[in-house]
Length: 263
Ligand code: DGL
Image (cartoon, rainbow, N blue to C red):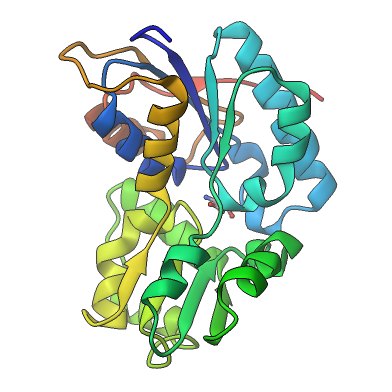
């Protein structure tokens, strides 16, 4: 694989940027195209069939238009249902992000918390992960769209209300010693979550593992000094676009471009 592979990263919103940051730290020389389906956000409350249809349409079009070499579905809510369809339709590698239950259960002594979207905690895929890897420890699940919104707000420069966050996390706080951040939005508010749950709770996400997987699949050992292109697309006009573009600029992206989806 050449040093300038084209990587496509997908999410419903800005959460996938937490995965992008991990990949780009290892491989800055690659070209990155990021697309977020904000027209159908939040995915944690979207029905199954619509989600699959939209992700398939977006990814297929972008892969063809941008000569993509590898796709990263940087969204747990989507990955837990769309990967088989995408892999059946594409000839390039498709990497998904699913809750890091396995590594987390090895670290837990007391109980494990899975903090994700309302959809992810109901998925059969998630329950299979829990059954396979965390039989001996209790798993407390919390599905919240408010946490996803908070991450969107923080990226646009709005401070998180810690007392509101404590209220949202209340059902799992005090019971667990390890928390899985099972939504890619949550590493963006990791410090705030840590401050509420306490320093003794270990927070685990899948970002670094995904970056290693992408690097392995592309077979590129080293980072180089060049910086690849970075483009970002949205399926609807984003809210607080100016503040969003400012944050995106700091991550190396040019302003958001519109990618209307007609299915
Ligand atoms: N970032 C997404 C995830 O990892 C989904 C957020 C949403 O749209 O509900 O699950």
